[in-house]
Image (cartoon, rainbow, N blue to C red; front, side, top):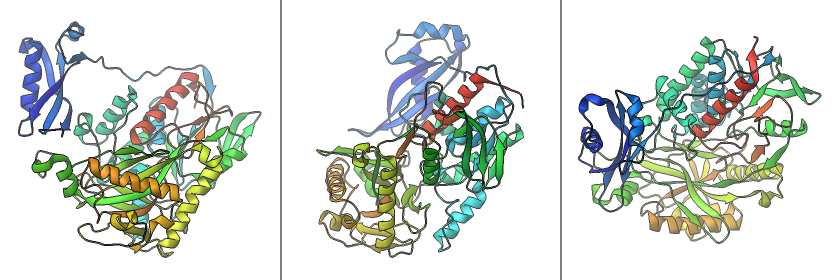
Length: 526
């Protein structure tokens, strides 16, 4: 594929105009072109707002595409790469077991199922339909299900956070993941928009379709089935124990997600090599989406051709990084607790992103040095914040909240004006300075002020902050070798929970990577 980059057009232009300009730049006869299409499009909001296109062109004779390498400015050539799958020689008598049906487990399971391995996927939570009903019940005042909630269940934590696919990893497997998502029902536009997202409402159907494909190919998905033990003999996996019985296997893929704390402690007892890793803690900040649009697009805010305004902001204090994470345009703050008597917040959007508010995590980095390089102390730090948030909220799963103006003044207060909080359980006026250690609060304050200078509208006096955001990433890394196994033969740490991903795309990619390694080492005899 030939890619013509850096085609800048005003916001009233059409994709057809961009394609036409891209084709003309190549100066080749129309009859030699098999197809031309938008490869990527983004918004450049610096100065006069423009769309920036990359146009993809396939030739009737693909062998001629290499003639354009380094020949024309802003023109590159991308050779499509199929997913490489090798076949090993070790006999595998029992199905591999995958623990977790988030993006990592889902894609690992799909690739292994296509290879004939008939994987068995354990998921402690419910299937997506039951899980959604359980989450709604909790939001409406019902009991928290600690096994099935916004953190646990089919699709993983990303199911309830917009389905954002933005990533910086640059792995060739990203195209495989994107194309697979589209094949199973995701919007075609995720292939070319600069900041792709599916939306929680559409992602649900995509996840179910992939799960049904795994089952069609001979795999099994066991919901409400929690891994409780891994049985090891002579440094090798022999079986796993679940709440519903024992399963013989020599391969366990640990795709448990970043909140499986009891599993982390069990793995430590089994002798897996593990270490603390950096993560972040902070709040959700809600602003009017219209204010974010004005801050980005100025007089063109609200133009029908422009997408909802998105931001990614960062500020470095003298000691720590402060940044925004998981920005949800037109979205809501959600109740993401997975342990009783705790409050955790996250954010989500539907595909249309048509809510009144924008929200994002505003977080401060913490490091292994903060916890004496002990991941158990890092987890206890998270729990302490979550329990304190529960107490400040009134011990009824309401979230502690206040407005930016009072937080910056170091006191409590909730001066609601234009921004109506969206946390579903309700909020309690609090002083979030009492929630965090002072150095975290100070960093949040400095970050708010600095970031609002970069994007006016991000942290206005009546912007609402809600606590506590603690699940930005796993506090744990499970060490794996060059063959992607832990120090216990047959255990493959995978995805975000194992410390090797950060978001839906990178987790899915890691799941594919692990499936490739298993296929490379073993042959099917199941």
